[in-house]
Length: 204
Image (cartoon, rainbow, N blue to C red; front, side, top):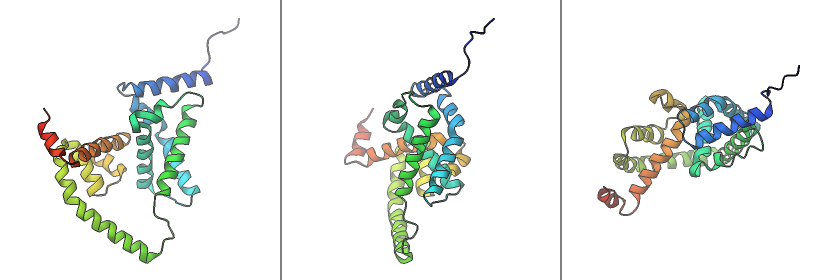
């Protein structure tokens, strides 16, 4: 007597991937956390391997920041990358490609490792001066954020904490920090526009 019950093969896995993505897009409770728990290790592995292949070995803090950037990439522009998942490849393969591209883009934007020491010192000093000049301005914009958003901005942009450190300090899941910071920056950017404070004051 043959067993006609379906086996848990590739098609079943593909359907499970599709359901998980749809659940994330629909903002079903726990769906995003499930995706992060299931694929966070993969993203960390791809980020570490991609950095090493490009001659840019990274430590745990940089790795956590890269993972957070990859997760943020999935949610950027109204979840565009998640929405683009068509199921033609497995979700594992799809996320591997996004992780590799996001990591490569982040590393390409980093200062070259062999830059002349004098130029590097000058650039670092200029960056620090710019951060000090911006700090008071950033603080003035924090008044438009709720307590959690203000704390995230202060930890990341003022105290220069990594996403991994912020997660440990606040208890916020690593995958939620990037999107929360993005929303906070959007609010700050709107308040910083000409007449932004006036529009905020007129809002009901």
